[in-house]
Image (cartoon, rainbow, N blue to C red; front, side, top):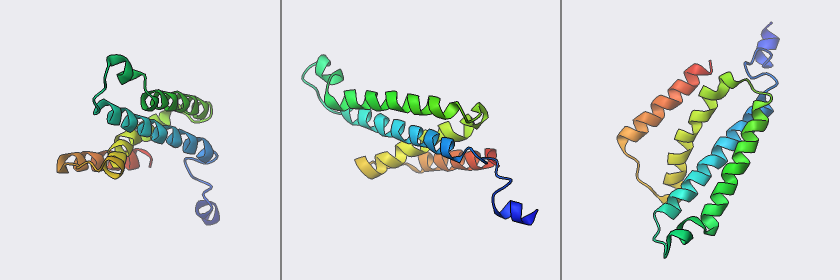
Length: 126
């Protein structure tokens, strides 16, 4: 019994790790696309057409498209009940990417919100 516990035999993710990793990757790349769109939204464009039809925006939407397929692939194997654990990761990824890439400042209130979400994810996954 102890050996089974130590080897991960009773893991709630047993056999699903690969698909959960794909789903988390999907959430991460979706978060990257959100930051890309945020960067473009903060820029001045010479026309409305250029605002929506430029390489950064088109790439971001392509990444969203890829993310959707990765999520659908993962959901073929992972029960939907894991969604409250995995999907909220974007609320953590986006601000972290914003801090690292865009050098954004983050308020104490937002840090507290992220911490509460993280704790919720950990508790829910137990």
